[in-house]
Length: 284
Image 1 (cartoon, rainbow, N blue to C red):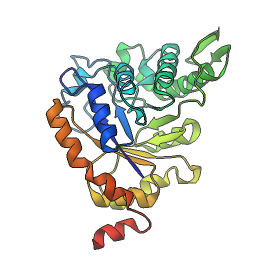
Image 2: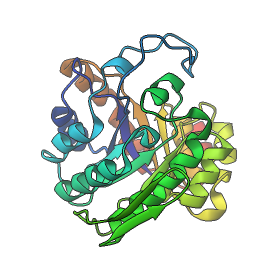
Image 3: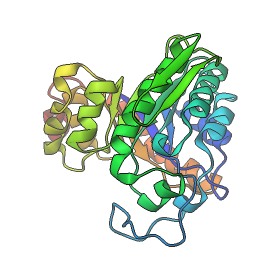
């Protein structure tokens, strides 16, 4: 099982390039960046975690710009969005952005997408929150059409465009990981995803049930924003997760480097996990 980092890059945090270089040097497999174009001043939608909305949501840099900077100073680090709010994006521009990032990074992109939670933010982009799931389905299909076909077109209920030319054409196609914790998100991953990108659970005992939602598909699972809990990591390794990412709060460079150094020893421990991993950690 691999370990990565999930975070926001902001105007107040360690730069994307420096962060990516430091993560790769310490042996982390991937860097996933969150996206919010803006946060409406008047907001009725409650923050899903139930507290005040953290500052980084207001100050997030564009993930594709930040990941391009990360690509320029790394060679093996996978570059992911966690998640891109495709229901708030123009699909043709986004197809080009993802394909361009894949080109400049040498094929290291994992395109994580989700329906989002902030209804006011969606509405400001002209998206009806009531139909965002069906819109996301069509935009995922349209993305792949643009990436694969020399003369790409799409005709759906919400997404329509006549044949277009658009390059670069990534080959192989960037994997699309479906974000979200619900059964609906898992179902979308089964239907349209190359992987599933749920938030990590906190109780190791809940891991098998979470991964069982897609177990019969063989889809790779990256569980994001996990705490540095060895028993939880062991449970994900035992259940066959592809990757777990740690949530790293955006902070100045010295603080972020200190946090990465605290997390790095878990790379060696996870590398030793195998069958009956939870039992082995418990006995250690």
